Image 1 (cartoon, one colour):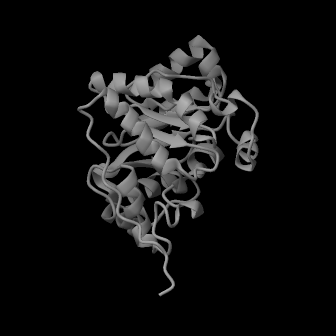
Image 2 (spheres, rainbow, N blue to C red):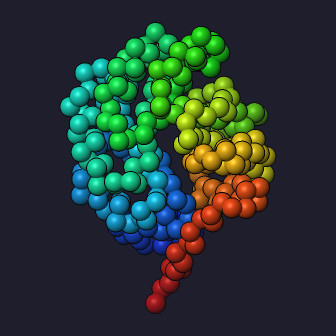
Image 3 (cartoon, one colour):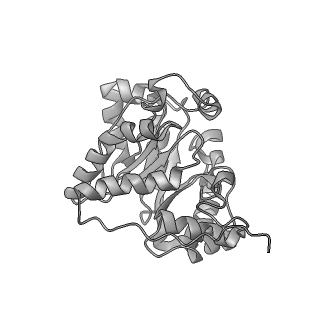
Length: 273
């Protein structure tokens, strides 16, 4: 996502057009989760407009449509996958990874479907898989089998441990409490391009405290020559772009060779005249 009502006037112009919003977001962050593609495959024209608003090294982690992952559970999906890949083709190198987010009911017994599906994806796309069934995290045999099946694909951890560390204290936290998965912590990377999803709290201090392990892990990956992508969320996401830049600054303090994020495009205040 690159738009949120609470971002207007802070990270995005107060009355920005759709063709400008991603450009402004890309001034704050150099990667985005393509969550909208989960609900509907966009047109090639729409995707071309995304490419036009972003630099060549901007990273889209685009989520496969739910008809592929949740409704058909990776079986008999050749047609919707072809349509999706055709739609995202204008991104070119900006398509950093295809994000295969699987439902919590997708269990180790279903792993054969994942293996078959990954073999059929075009080799030019990186693949990143997010699983949510507890057995993949608690059963060493299931975890090892998943890593084998992933091959050259990455395993995306969704760290919700900080969020679920204490009871909710805001309306947004209470809403997220019933929707977000309670995921066991996983910190290993399988490839040169790790992807991490982190969910903090609405209180900035608690979010920052909870991500400290990821600051150290990310810095270590960079020193190893890996190229990680980290997405920072909070229940209301009101400050997410600024928090992402703060996370980047903390990593850069440990890895001075890390390039800075782009300078945000100035947001003009809304005026009456």
